[in-house]
Length: 138
Ligand code: CMP
Image 1 (cartoon, helix red, strand yellow):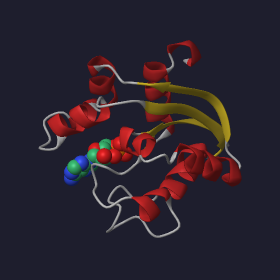
Image 2 (cartoon, protein in one colour):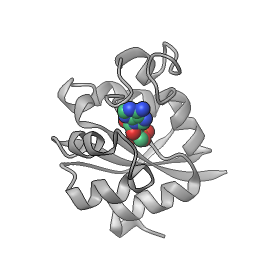
Image 3 (cartoon, helix red, strand yellow):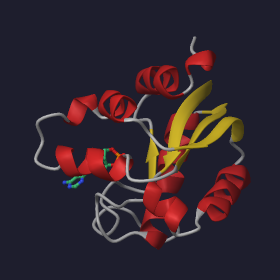
Image 4 (cartoon, rainbow, N blue to C red):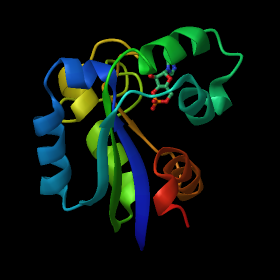
């Protein structure tokens, strides 16, 4: 089933010059990039994006981190795009869950600084796409 997913290369991934590598992995997997923008997230967009984590102990530092510098926001499209990107990203915890060969498994140590975000369902994807790329909603 063709679907869309919202991916972020977070500020740690941009600072560490991993943008090219991550885009290459996405392209090799066969997913299409249908929108891409380098931008610094506003506090408003960051809060909207991470609304489900409000109240959790790591929420304040997560907001501070995600707004700390430029990130790359992308919309990917393809067959089962949500699950496909989550597969190449690896699990949220880059040591306990993500295995070597995945983006997080190869490049990250700490759960907060886990390099990329990918929508967790097609419904989340549509909500997140509307937030980051209002012109693409629907
Ligand atoms: P992401 O896929 O962007 O979705 C929520 C983010 O919150 C997650 O990646 C991590 O960056 C962060 N996160 C989730 N759990 C924790 C945790 N226990 N401690 C710190 N950060 C976390």
